[in-house]
Image (cartoon, rainbow, N blue to C red):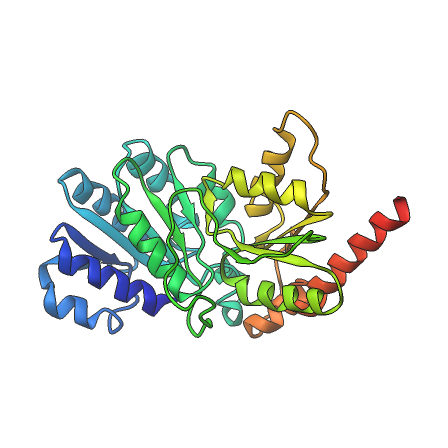
Length: 316
């Protein structure tokens, strides 16, 4: 995903001389081509993430289009005041990219996990939150964010090596979700958010093969939500599942739950929210290991979905 971000920003910079790129002491070699071609438009601020956001706000006020890049937990938790006051309050068109969202840096322990960032950022007035699920969606998100003039956008990236689910960047607009797999009379709708998309694809295929018609959407836009897609999901399915590599509190599932309770009539289908638990992970290992501990493997997700369906049948 991070290479897709690099390439998309480089392409924008070729067309728009206002594009500037700021990094907090990571990605130096990754951005070699950008630095070589646009040496006056790349700023390595060092290990000073608050300064990066403040500098980006000033550049935006001067008419430039800044893109900020560093590890997700450092560009959100450490910088939340600057994002809130310098960017959101002043409606500055700055793109904040967080690489390694969720459990991507699981080998470095909980200090490098980023499982509360969606909740923090989506609560800020004027902030858009985009969570691409594969490299082509990263490209689409960078292009979409470049069109916004009235406020900042947070793009939550995975790390590297994520498989491409789309053949090419999908067409995105604010508050829309691509439908990856449709199903006639679906029993289950999976709403996948961010870098767990390959797990969602695997889960959908397993459920379908087991005789449970399942449709799948990639919910790139966490803020704003796709209200039309949500209405369709809850009207057509027996069960709606949100899947994310983020805390079950305040994240994408929380946003969907808020939408549900705000509806004038209760939806037809129950909501099952799957994410990381409300606890720190005090063990280190690979991302796949951390996912398995948190119940985010395809096996675990399938079991949770089938259990929820069985519980529905028992109550009927």
